[in-house]
Structures are given as structure tokens and as C-alpha cells.
Amino acid sequence: MIGHPCPGGTVVMSAVRKSSMVTGSGRKIKDNAADWHNLMKRWDKLNDEGFDVATNIVNLRRSQSDHLLLENSSSSSSSSSAQQVGGVSELEDECFKLQEVINKMVAVVTKMEHLMKLQQGIEDLEEFQFKGEGRKAPLFHTWNTKQFGAVSRVLFDSFSEELKLKQTILQELAHTSSSDLCMVYLSSWLHQPFIPTHTRLTLEALLLETGHRPL
Amino acid sequence: MSRLAVSTLHDVLRKSFASLESSQKLWISVLAECSLLMVSLGNLAEQWRALCGVRISNTPLRGFPDLENRLRSKLLEATDTVLVKLNEKMFSLQSIRDSISNQVSAVLQLYEQNADSLDLLAVTERSTTTPSVADMLEWLQDAERHYRVQFLRRKTLLQTLRADDLQFLESAPKRWKSLDSPGAQEQITDTLCKVSFFLESR
Picture 1 (cartoon, one colour):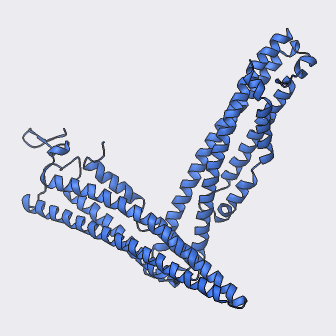
Picture 2: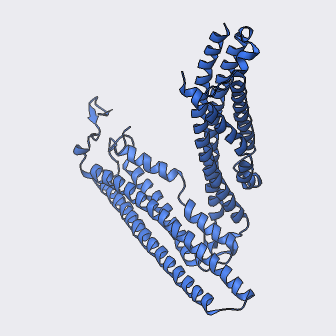
Picture 3: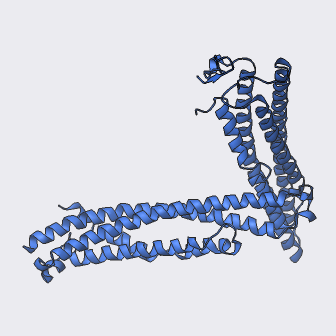
């Protein structure tokens, strides 16, 4: 148990570490942290799924273009146009799959926004309860309540910007003839430039602070 | 006198070939892991090349003005991670090389110590199940040389690679593959076949 001395010499026990005894705002923040972790895991899975579909789209586009080149250089036949129709419908299917992945990612980011708003609510409540002076002791180990809000905002901003990028990729991928640009789209999807590596560390810090990870 | 020396040598030779057998398996498995990492490096180099060939401001991605820097940063990070993993594999190869070198030195040292009591007949005598001491020493030295040279060449190649040097990164997988020496590897497998009865006998 962490003890914090306060004026007068008495020791105030900070919020207890055993999860069964975390209540009120602490409980809410701890649950939010678990939700953040689960949402990010879900996002990662969707990212991998989306990357596979996006790669298929690029490959289908490439084989379509190769087909067109072959057709133009030789006399067209009914079998090759049937193949092309088949290729187009396959491409449409993959684009539809990618749209579905994006829809699920939108749902994830919407839930992240909700978590961020919940955190804001907890901060507002604390503002009201402690009349702007804040808590005397941290809810968990060292973070003050505002820090949880700051983390939520940073995480939400990253994922929401990343989602915008992915939506742009979805719109453009199947219509891009430049192979370099296709590669840049795939690269952007895979590496998630708006979710910096330290975002994962931020989540770990949140989980450590709220006791989900042992110190 | 020479019978005792030959018998002592045989014991150490058995240990060396047993060690060579397990080292060869480990070497092949570490090289396979390196090949996969080289494929990743090739993919990353392709991505770098594509990013260099595109002006983001002329594409639908222009709405993300700092995208290029962020993507470069991510590619650099990913490339660095692969290079670090490759360097770790080098440590494994180094330890396999050292293990074989130590074994072979020990055998040669023992041979030197007993050289006076070993005549030409003793070292060249062979049977259906037991190759001659001279042959076995030669095979061990050949194997040791192969691993020593392989390690040196691969280590040298890796030292030319930097995460921000696209030219070297692009050519790395091909250059790595060119260092394969299937002939020498087969020779070691052949050696182990030739000593298999010897290893089983006691």
C-alpha cells in the first residue's frame, strides 16, 4: 500500500491496489484503460485483415492492366473479355471487403471517442467535487486525473487521423495506375504513420498506472 | 603405443563429429531465419524506392502534409528492426563457428601431442566402418574453414547495410543469396555420412 504524508503528520492511504477495492472514478478509469487495450487489439487485427485485402486489390489491378496490355497487342477474343469481367467482379468484391474493414474501424474509433468523453466527464466531476483544487492523492500510483484525459485525447487523435488516411486509401486504391503510388498506399496502410510507436508505450503506461500490468 | 594414441584420438574425433552434426543443423536453421529477414529487407527497400518515386503533394494524399516524413520515419524504424534482428542472428552464427573452431583446435592439439607415437600407417589406416585419422582430420578442417569463411563474408555484407542507404538495402537480398555455398554444405553432409558408422561404433 502506498502511503502519502499530508499536513498534520497523518498518512493518507492512496487508492488501494487490489482491484476488488477500486471504486468510483478509479473503477471507471481502470475499466476505460482495459477498454482502450481491447480496442487497440481489435484495431490491430482489422489492420492486418485490411492489409491482406488491399494487397489483393493491388494485385488484381496489376493483372487487369497486364491483361489489357495483352489484349491491345493481340486480337481480342470472347474468352479474354469474359476473363476481364470476372476480374472486375473479383476486384469489386475485394473493394467491398475493404469497405467492411473500414466500417469496423469506424466503429472502433467511435468507441474510442466515447472513452475520451467518459474521461472528460470524470475530470469535470473531479473539478466539481474538489472545487478546482484537485485530489490530494493520486487515484492510482502517480498520475493526476488530468493525465488520463490527456492520454485519451492523444490516442483518439492518432487513431482518428489514421482512419482518415485509410478512408482515402480505400477510395483511391482500386483506381490508381501508378505502381509506386499503390506501393505507397499499401505501405501507409501497413505502417500506420499517424500511430507512432510511442502510442503503444502510452497504452502500456496507462495499463501499468491502473494496475492492469504488474509493476 | 600408437594403438592407445589412435584410440584417444578416435574418442575426441567422435565428439567433434557429433558436435559438427548438431552445429550444421543449427547453422542451416539460423540461415533460413536470415533468409526470411532478407526478404523483409527487400520488401522494405521496395517501399522506400516507391516513396522516393512519388510526390505526395501531386496525389490524393496531399491532404496529409506530414505523411511523407511520418512514413519515412516508420520505414526507417522497420528497417532498423530487421537489421538488429540480422545482427542477432550473426551472434548465433558466430557462436556456432567458435564451437566448431574450438573442437577442431582441440583435436589438432591432441594429434600434435601424440604425433611422435603416431606413424604413417596409424594415421592412414582405415576400415569399412572407420575412416583414417588423416581423412577425418582433413574433413574437420575443411568444415571449420567453410564456417569461418561463411561467417566472415556474411558479417562483412551486413556491415555495409544501413537503414538509410537504399542502394545497399536493395541489393542486399541478392548479395546474401550469392554467398550460399551449396557445394561446401553438401560436402559436410557427405562427411557426416562417411563417419556415421564410426560414430556408432565404440
